Amino acid sequence: MPEGAAIGTAEDRAVPSILLFIGADIASFILFFAVFMGERLAQPVQFARSAAQLDARLGLANTLILVSSGWLVARAVRAGTQGNRHGARRQLFAALLVGSGFAVIKLVEYTADFQRGLTLLTNDFFSFYFALTGVHLLHYAIGMVLLGYVARMARTSTDPEFETWLTGVGLYWHMVDLLWLFLFPMFYLQGLW
Image 1: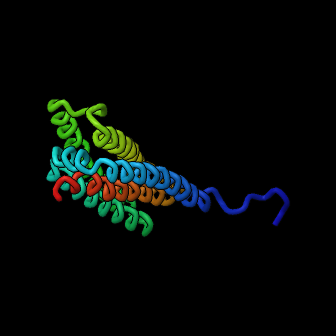
Image 2: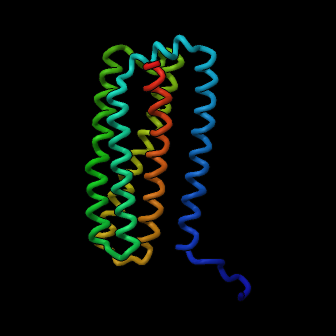
Image 3: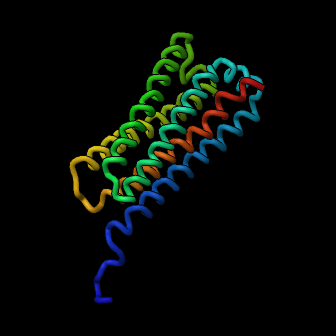
């Protein structure tokens, strides 16, 4: 190999880069989850009473929305990597449409919480609830923008990096799904026991 030559192409490095980002992001959430669980063990009654104030049906609906949207993104990645940009674009738009329900439900839920006087300052449970679901909502919003970008890219671009972008955004979206699959039982289901 000539001196100073790059190892691999930009495309070869792109997916591992997103994997490093996802790994670091998940590691930070794991730290927050551990702190939450420590506080939950220290205040079991308060956490159970607080969790019982959340609407588990809304949390379940959002779980189903994100899992369905993730399935559509997986179909888009498959279509895109098989050279079917039109099919990938259709699946991405379907994922965006289904996924938008998540924001609608969170808006309804947060509005109801605030109307009942529940805020970050209510108690430790709600501090964690609003902080972690809020950070997740930010990740979700970034994911929606990225899905829209890749859907547009599928329509207008002949860029050879499309598959790399599609795969990277797909991995990011699945991280958003995965994080919610931990947040949902952590916050919504403990109030049911």
